Image (cartoon, rainbow, N blue to C red; front, side):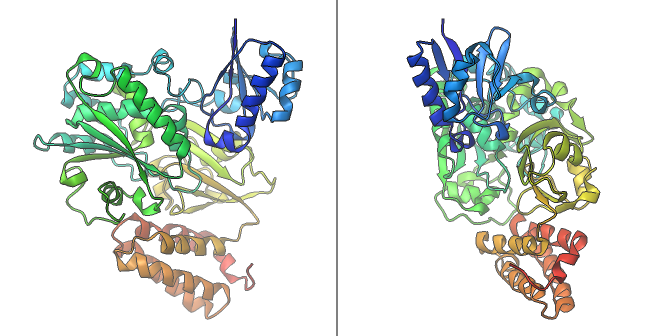
Length: 514
């Protein structure tokens, strides 16, 4: 009888040598005539332990990591196929403290199943949500999403059910469901992890959305930098079609929904929903003036649902377990869970899915273990390159939409980037303006010109040229961009700059910069 051994095919694990580890396990197993079935799963998101190898034992899976190719022979010598003791042993996977204390709903199967196996997906609760949705009316599905309290996980945090109801209420016509998988924020990787580790959750969520609003066609707009996700999605789409979970007659219900993956060209601006729709139509990625909203006039001028990966992948569990089950996680108006992503100068970087309400301090120290350098953490940027920098004095803030807004920050896509006390915050302010200048679509003057002038003004401040006058000018420029930009790129670029001016102003007064 063969023993199941799991080695991730997640892009981050591959970058750390997972492919070589997998080959070494196969070679050593043949040499020792061990019966091993190698399964390429997604990553569990404990990236400081990648590549993490798991062995399926009668009492559960046992983890070893981080495993290098040269460690494989010693693992076999230690009888790791039976859970043998080894310096790299992490014990039972589910008992690893980082993982055990999480509340994984959306990413529950990531790292657990073989990503594109329909049988494995169904065995772990997959397609139960779609089955129940097919027995409901479209209005009942939309009401369940409304009742769950799910808000868009892409950054805007708009109630998902309201968006779906708007599309449902449009006159019968060709409607679309689109997934914005152009994950471009710094420190974010939950979308990629889901698409590589559990792509069928996204496919099921989009299928339910199509049935709910009367759409028969969907598109996943995927960033071109995610080749492994592209391969996993297409493999999963083919498997879903063959198993009758996608296509003209879904599960014999007479309902139809088809889905395609389209690759974006790498523009950050296409993370904004109307720019994404322009790109999907084959045009230059550029902001549309609103109204009309995409829910009324979206892709090809038709009513369109636009949600991101985590939002749509959260739908199956809401339909499978009920709106109340999902709503019972979280706090206030922030319901459910969010896969948070820890990156930057942090000891234990990775994915942490928890209900809204834990503090930033808990995330940084209980999960992250503090900085990787061992120095004090000085600042944390939450919400991508347009997110505010939060100082150590505010680390007790709860991670939910309203609490972060209350301190002038935003949650965004849940990316958390950590900086120790060696960081030059004046440089980070300059980077925010420079990033906007590079990524602006150019449609509106405050974003296109304001960001370029912002870089110039910050350079003058750093060099000590009329510093106080230019600091006032920078504050005025931020206000102009905030109030006058057409979309969130120009409108939110001031957030990191303003937070630095408020909490780290002293960094603008050191004359010499490198």
